Structures are given as C-alpha cells and as structure tokens.
Length: 404
Ligand code: ADP
Image (tube, rainbow, N blue to C red; front, side):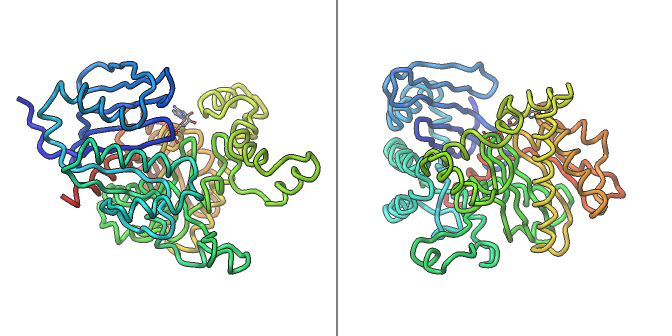
C-alpha cells in the first residue's frame, strides 16, 4: 500500500484550462499531475500522469472548470483512493492580488470578492481563477483552500520602485502602479539561491531572472522584493516571446495616429506579435531562434542581442536597490536551458561588475538534462551566478500546507 503522507493539491486555472498537481510539500515529490484544456469546447480534453505511470488522456467534451475537477475526483483519483484521502489542502495560483494581498491567504467570500475587484488588471486570468476556486471548493469542501498571488512577493517594493511618474490621482483613485508578476517563482528562487550558497535567505541579495515565454527580473534583498521589471501588467520590462517589454509610450500614440490603429489593436500587437517573434521573424520559441543564430541569421542575432542587452541593463540597474549583489540566478524555460542567453548576458556584465561564467558549468547547466541547479560562475567571479530550476507548484504547496 502506498504511503503518501500529507499531500497538497495545486490548481492553476487559465480561461480554458486547469493545470493540477498533487505533491508532497516537503520534498516536492509529485504523485499526480495533469491538464484539462479546451474547456467549454467540444474538443475539451483532460490528460494526467501518475508518478511512474504513463500519460493518459480522455475526452471531456463541453466540460467547464467544475466538470474537469469533478472528473479528476470521480474518474482519475478514484483509481487511487489513498492518494485522494492524502490531500489535506489546496493551493490556488492567482495572477493578480492587487495591492491587497502580500501573503498567501485562506479563501473565503471576501477573498473571492477582492480577486474579482482586481479583474481589470488581469482580465483573462482572475475570472478563470474564480471559476477554479468555486469548482475546487465544491469538489474538495472539507480542506483549506489557499490563494497564492503572483503579485504578493512584490508588495515589499518601496514607493520609489512601484510608483509611476504620472498624476497622483491615477494612483490613488485607479491604483495604477507597478505590481510585478511571477512573484512566486522569484520568491522560490531567492530562498533556493540562499540555500545553494549555504546561507540564510535574509543574508543574501540576489537578482532573480525568470525567463520563460513571459519573463521578468527582480531585485531581492534578504528574501524581500525591492524592484521588479514587470509593471501594471506583464507587458513591461524584458523582451519576451511575443511581448515587447518596455518601450516609449509614444509608440502607441504614433501607431494610433499614423496607421489609425485602435488601442485594442496596438495592445494585440505589443502582447502577441512583438518580442522575440517580431525581432527574429522566425518564432517566439527561443530554440529555433538560437538555431538560426548559430547558422548566422542576422535577424536572430539581433533578437538575441536585444534580449541579452535588455536583461543585462535591468540586472545592472538593480545594483541601486540592492547596494551589494551576492548572486544572479537564472530560471524558467530559457533561463534553465539556454546556455547562450546566460553567456550573452553575463558577457555584458563582465567588465563593469567582474561577473565571470564558468563556460563548462554553464554548458552543463541544462534543466532538461536533469541538472539540479547550482553555481555556474568561476571562483574568481565577484558575484555568484546560478541556474536553479524554478518550482512554483512546490512554493504554492508549501504555502497551502502552512494553513493545515
Ligand atoms: P512559460 O512561461 O510558458 O511557462 P517556459 O518557462 O516553459 O514558459 O519557457 C518556454 C521558453 O523556454 C521557450 O521560449 C522555449 O523555447 C525555451 N526553451 C525550452 N528549452 C530550451 C532550450 N533547450 N534552449 C533554449 N530555449 C529553451
């Protein structure tokens, strides 16, 4: 008989998807994970994998979030009742908590109302999260449900980092400010970087680079966020797969004036048709772009050049809030796997900051090859550089378990 101990269910809802995982919050061991997608459509499908098992899938035509979770309980977990009964808490990933939440929070009606209140800042995500919370509370009524906000970690930023230099009433009345994103990942990386260096979280100042399809970089002082590159929304900051990152706001007015584009059309271009995709002219996916970079494609060279330059400039600017920088940590699909992005970025940081990658360690540090993470800089480097595979699910599971 399997002995699962106490496990946490972690749920991440998108507008037409539910990602789920059941894991041990102490060691991160995943017993089951899966994804329900195309929800609401005839092609809705759920796929899952028990630890050590094969991937399985089933059609759940027309199912919504609630039917998908019902399927999880009645058709998937019914195959392993002990795993079902090991679940003692449920953690929900929430993209936007506004300036209301700075900590994981036990779900109640007020929390649901507040998540609804900040929908204007996350119009695609927060409504889906609410559906997920309602569905999960119905399917798992007797365990604590805990919301873990992507924005919470950034709430320690001082006003000088989060305020925009625009009329005050836009902040006081409309709450326009920098909220950041990927906070759960940045916090995980700040904690794990300190562990990897054999220090306490409070002792270490680290610049965490979460580089996935979306990408952001944070200045973490003793485990607290001092600044981050994403702004009011996840459009700001670094160059991303399809997002422009920071640009002169005049670009928007110019496109509206000259091409008679509507604000909605410009928003679509900046979110979905820009970034690495636009610069490379090939793909938003870094892999083919890197391949063409090595083949000498000029557009792909420019794409990687802009990508690394922007990232290095953000890293350099975070010496201001941190004063002393102990480490720079790379994570996310690109941060974990692209030795090229890490190399190009650190090359720019070598002369001004004495940062020096160990080429052999950098080439070895590939997340998909099972490298567990660690230092990839030379002993002489003035700042340690690390690659650490991020694990937002584990962070959410830990947060949920703290309420048991
Ligand atoms: P998301 O933000 O959607 O969670 P991920 O963290 O999975 O994204 O990162 C996706 C990105 O990681 C893609 O651009 C992909 O090309 C990149 N990536 C994955 N593997 C590699 C690799 N071996 N080399 C370079 N880039 C990679």
